[in-house]
Image (tube, rainbow, N blue to C red; front, side, top):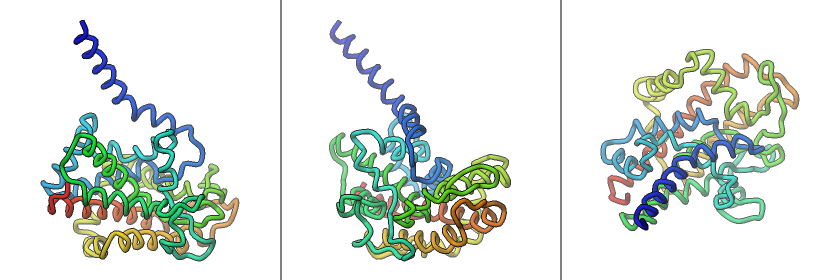
Length: 306
């Protein structure tokens, strides 16, 4: 009888674990002020990252993912957004963005990478450094250590998307464009949300028949034999963890100033001209976010770190 109770408890726990992503999605759907690529942006970034992996790195990722992910990294790419308001993970909330001095249009790690209390490294650039380091230095070990590696993989994949979203490295005063109210065509929005989701959804509707696979296919063609094929090596090139995260953040604040904030005023209606000129920037940053973690995971797998 005791054995039966134990087996039943195991079945209940498995059911609870499988429900966690659903419960988390409900939390994030009702949470105010979310700041992140849309789920579509993160899914695209993670699909690109996974499709570029060689066999060894692909096996590592498959082994680190929980069984219910069915080997699909993109199915859990929004997990860090889903759990950021849970008590256990509230500390991760500042890791999704960087607030830079208003109108400075520069990023300085020592100046900008901290939370509201001044704790150092508590920004998305610090998160990229931290979770990359975890994947580099953890070896095969206990089940607890392997679980932490799973978290490191999911956090890195997600934050690599966030750091490539230009408005995630925005100005402090307007919270990365969150307080700049605009109209996106006919409905109310804000500048941050325009870059998080509005541009992506409009592109999906106008050019891809709302089919994410078609969108992904277009990005992949640009990477393999299109306009970005000669640029991939430069996207992957940086000297160390600090220079890598600084590079991504600097690119984002530069794009935020040139394309995000430029010409936008409070209450303005953003429509065709803004969409058509900014969509290529969004598409490229989604692709860059997929190429960068792919390079990290691939190198770590080859060196036997993971």
